[in-house]
View 1 (tube, one colour):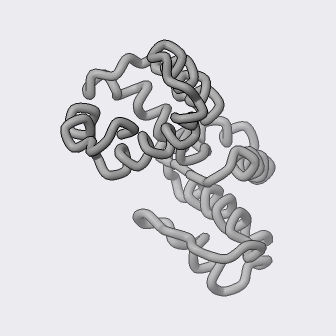
View 2 (spheres, one colour):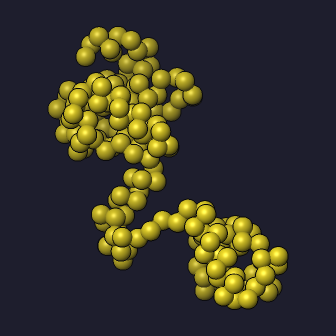
Length: 165
């Protein structure tokens, strides 16, 4: 393992060798973040950390897959037991396991933008509202804004100032 640690610059080496407690790695594109994270995972495993206690979260599926492959290349099959995923996949997995405590069905479905547009169009048809007057994307944007402001349906209805709202 020491051979590949020598490839790192001092800041990267410090991050890889930090094995006590959590660590946030914040760096620009092409700076070696994925290498640091994968080497750090290998170092944690070498230090006796259980693979099930490691969570590596990234932004894209591509980055998560690359990280899994690199860790596997360093440590072998034990890498399959490490949780490497995107933020969205991680949150969905947690909700599927523990969402019952919040009243969520573990088989919930997450709609992407296309699915959401289909539902809004169906609702507009059922309400006999024209897409010319109620643009589905504008409706979705309004719903998203209300959700971001933590405004529920009843509260939104009470503060609606016009027919469109």
